[in-house]
Image 1 (cartoon, rainbow, N blue to C red):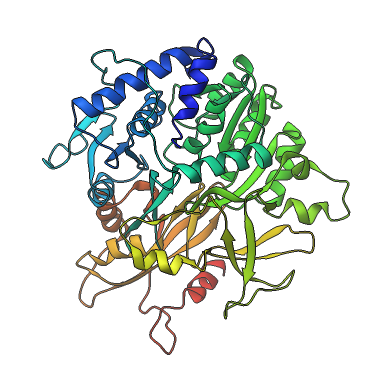
Image 2 (tube, one colour; image 1 turned 180 degrees about the vertical axis):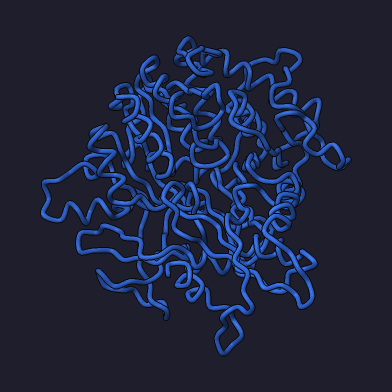
Length: 498
């Protein structure tokens, strides 16, 4: 089956329902959206020679065209490769090359002007010609639909192969466990559509619901408050730091959440005080999810009734959990020798589900390490209680989560180590009130060399995305190491906390 069939059927069933908005302005009905998809699919095939299985990348901010680009790719059996728009062009270029993308959509059509091997087109360029409306190409459940690049802790990003079947199962779990999609809802894309927010368009399309891309093309608290008042029934995904910013802005504006139906939060730790304040101001409008790119948005969920519940004797503990296994998910907590642990024993969270990825793109070794005996090893530590609620004890080793975005220290360390004056470096996360964590680099300078924070800041600016750059540089004579010569990052974190 082809996930694009959902749009095709919704458009034939409810052609005049409003589909795509830019802010408050209606851009397309479902009939017009389907026509745009067919037009673009024909262009991909005839003008660019895209065939089933080819990869098409999108390296752009949120845009109304994002929806029809994804569906046009799927309609002809191609694989979409959405790339985080916050990445540095050099990082995006590596992903595009690794994926073997034959075409890249960008904001200005000139992100890779110096690379003749990359064929680039603007997201907003008009599509020439009008194509007949036809059903999407047949695809199998195991055919790859979405190639999602998630950085590993040991080097270059890995391409997660998300299949049509994965997307169907994820959407079914969303409808059962997270929020029931409705035609009158406005799905707001304030978080990147290259990530979870884009995945959540699918259940909304299945019910011929509405899709709103903010005029700012991102997360703006005042804009969201305004859209809530004018559009109503807003539903959107937000990282915990976004929720905190929105609640702060709402208090200042005297806004109590009217017009917001559901905020789905995840992608980082939500502190107890923050969700308490959010519930106090907005009421029961919040649902929580826990997932990974390897099982997109789908491991566990804490639906709105459980987030808001204060009747259960252990409601406080439950609110601090990440919920219960989603409908099509089995969760095990495994010990270091692979044994299944009992309730309240901490170990590695492992998942078996039809939402689990097909594997890593062209990386059989990494796939074999991640999926063993059918179980995805998440790398996250946690425990299940007697009632099946999942608690995260710690994240994957060393990963920094800032503003809901994963930052992998190895990537930053490798960039800094290329500086001619840097001898050694270790990057860790430091708690930060607004963003959750910020990046801190401990740096050892080569003998006889001198370098300061400004020089390292300029160096990083040329090599990696802005959100990955260290916010602080701490210069030390020697990094703490164990008897095996490995850097002991726990000692560096203790130094920060002291």
